[in-house]
Image 1: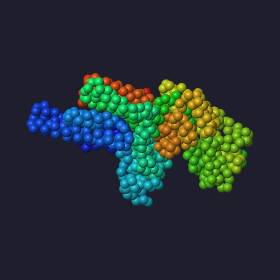
Image 2: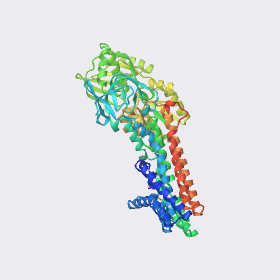
Image 3: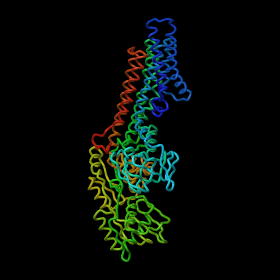
Image 4: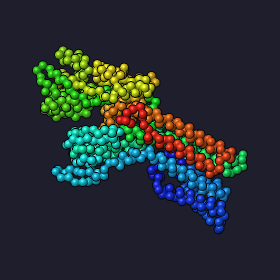
Amino acid sequence: MIGRFSRIGDYRELFSFRDFTLCGAGGLLAFGSFIWDFFNFSPAWWGLAFAVVAAAINGVPIVLGAAKGLWQRQVNMDELVSLAIVATLVQGEFLTAAVIGFIMTLGSLIEEAIGESSRKSIEALARMTPEEATLLEGAATRTVPVSQIRVDDRLLVKPGDRIPVDGIIISGTTAVDESSITGESIPRTRKQGDTVLASTLNYNGVIEIKTTRVGDDTAMGRVVRLVTEAEMHKPRSARYVDRYAKWFTPLILSAAVLTWWFSGEVNRAVAVLVAGCPCALLMAAPTATVAAVARAARAGILVKGGRHLEEVAQADAILFDKTGTLTLGEARVEEIFAREGLSREEIISCAAGAEQNCTHPLARAVMKAAFYAKVTVVKAENVLSEIGLGVRAMLGGSLIEVGSAYLGSGTAALPAPLRARLEAMEERGATPLVVYRDQEPIGILGVTDTIRKSARRTVKTLSHLGITRMGILSGDHLRSVNRIAADIGLSETWAGLKPGDKLQVIEEFQRQGHRVIFVGDGINDAPALARANIGVAMGAAGTDVALETADIALTHDEVAKLPFLIRLSRRMLTLIKVNIGLGLVFNAAAVFGSSYGALSPIAASLFHNAGSIIVVLSSASLIFFQDIHTSGEDA
């Protein structure tokens, strides 16, 4: 029972009012036994009966838990406390056994209640998701339980309602408070075609949405799942503690035997057994891990486990993708250049036909340009996306290719007018997309993007945090990459990279001894996200690939969260080390004090639980971590 509390995942199943009631009843009976004997009430056997029942209520579950653990060959700390209880009972000190059982059980329940605060904020968010939704069936509406909603159902969401599922707005415009998911307190305008998330608040507009994800598959469901599973991925420091914990029980047993041998006092040996239970040490890392993962989730940062936070704390190099990471990813086509004999409308129509089912920001820019140009977009067949190069598709019997000049034979193969226009686009920092038809270049689209307002401030803050190397890895051309780097204060750039080239750059950093964080969009950068020490994906709220590939995902596309993430991870590591130190100090002091007779068995149990509670409180403080060095939006 006591030892099981060192695994945070058991807290929710153990925590109940009934546990506190039984524990309190045992404590009252023990107190009644003490009063009965102190005043010599009669009959005297009533005091003994109170003590025996009290010992049974709080002591028997501990002994049974130890026996069960031994039967399953899972030794935990219950064995030490059980031996202490059994030893006092054998001596006939029933009141002492009752008090030890009460103090140990109460202390564990208090630790449990405090530890639950690490989850409360996330569970409260989960409860924000409404239980009912308004389903649209043609022109009619009806209210149904959210559990009955399926993908592609149409829902009506009124002002003031919480959105019940993840979906896409098909009609209407509104402002949405997404703070429950992204940590961003300012409502954002959402219109037709935009994604909205479950549990977020619809402020002032009537919208119709088409369901894309329901239940545990929603962004909120993922948040809760990641926090719940956090303790499964322990940081390295927690694994070290687990490795050596198996030696604690035989070590403390040996200390108790030696104490009994040299002192001749059984009570001292019993006190050593109680004091030696290293609950505080075992809870040092897992409590801090869950608290830190929960705090990160509240800030819109999804972390797959404590070991990834530990890696973040030790990182000294950050490499960024460019499009959609350092830029807004809201690219727009600012220029369309057609080969002689062709129209601009024909070029954008071909490009949009090939790009219509792609999700890359450049593809979205092409589709937006086609919409405003009011051109016909033909349905594509045999679409093939080549990561880092572009896309190929069959349109009306012709092979259409859109992307880098390297989709063909490079810039040297372009006719002089197209090559000159491509170089001019590159010179001013635009990204050129070459359009080929049947392997012949027919035009170029010049695409520009906007740098994130927070990018320069983020880079500066990361530098102050001791990140020694930062740079951009991009498939874009050198001039565009250098322009972005100069604007945000980065000096290292790698341009014209294919996905494999990005891996080589990351591996070279790692060979030099750097721990690398790579930040990308979670779609085209999957190999780099997987190879880096820590992969951070942008926009995970709507991207399956991001959560599958990356170790950490930012639910809101904002690199400004990175400094907060690094400071939180460093605080977590510091607290783990402090907690381990406190656990060792408390255990050592209690064992030595007990062996020398300074602590009675009851005093040893009090001292033991005080250490455990202090450690859990220390970890729980991470829930309230505020980054005073960043703005409110970052925390």
